[in-house]
Every structure is written in structure tokens, then in C-alpha cells.
Image (cartoon, rainbow, N blue to C red; front, side, top):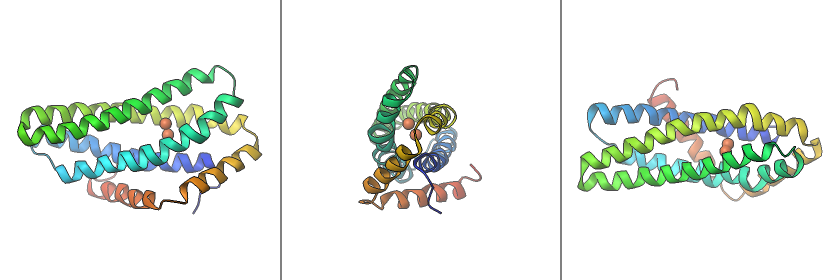
Amino acid sequence: MAPANPIEALLNEHSYIIKVVKALEVIGHDIEAQATIDEALLSRIIAFMREFTDVYHHAREEKLLFPIIVRDCPPEIDNLVSTLLDEHNRGRNLVKLLEKGIERSKSDFAIGSEVISAAINGITGLYPKHISQENDMLYPMAEKLLAAGELDCLWEDFEAKGAYTGIHEKHKAFALDLEKRFGKL
Ligand SMILES: [Fe+2]
Ligand SMILES: [Fe+2]
């Protein structure tokens, strides 16, 4: 069922991001224990993190939700928003590092797998906390402080901006597949 408001939509997206991040944690342990890399799977996860987490989800936050929060909520919230924006950048850099590690592992497996592990540890350390801060602090504050009309406008913007791509549905299905493959995440 379609979410009733933009905050519910973002919460729903977080649930898919967490599935992939938790699977990545298991994959990271497997790489360390078995000394093998499933390059195709990691590349698919990179596509998810770029196309779903960043281009789709982060963009909704950065271009649509955060500016309204900064404009309408008390100034104390500005620090939290700038921390969250920094974390989005850290996430992007960690995904780039993961990609570099895969490339490096082709010529030097030991160094490449170390880079991959560092990237995975960074991602799995960053996202659960980032998402908790949004779920437990930022989003409830936005729901409380933004007028109902503003949430409705935001939802319309989400719909308009999301309409040009169905790619997020493919990524949600991938996250569910990972959940099945790696057990209850
Ligand atoms: Fe975020
Ligand atoms: Fe988020």
C-alpha cells in the first residue's frame, strides 16, 4: 500500500536500506572468513547504494525535506541536518571505496579485500546510526512542526520527482531477495 505521507515513504525506504546494510555486514564477515569475493553481488549492492540510497532516497531528503526543516524548525535542528548531510557524503565516499577495493582485488587480492572490508565496516557502522537519528529525531520533529499542508505539498513533490523512474521498485525487490538469502535481517 502506498505510504500516506512523505515521512512514511522515507521510513519505508529506510527499511530497505537497512536490509541491504545488514546483508553487507554478513558478506563482510564471509569475505574475512573465506577469503573470497563475490564481485557480482558487491557490484549489485553498489548499484543499490547509488541508485536507491543516494539518487532516490538521499535526494528526497536533501532537495525536498531538509530545506523545509531548516526553514521552519528551530535553529537547534540545523546542526543535526548538517551532520546528516555530512554522513550522506561519507556514505558516498565509502561506496566509492568499496568500488575501488573490488577493482584492486583483481590485481592484488589481499590489499583489495582489506579495502573492501574497510569500506563495508564504514558503511555498516554509518547507516544504522544515521537512519536511527532520522527515524527517531528528525522525522518525528518534522511531522510535529510542519503544517499538514506542507506535508501534503512535500508528498506531491515526492510523487512528481519519483514518477520518472521505476528503478526503485527493482532495488526494493533486490533488498527483499538479500533478506531471503542471508536470513532474517
Ligand atoms: Fe539521510
Ligand atoms: Fe534517510
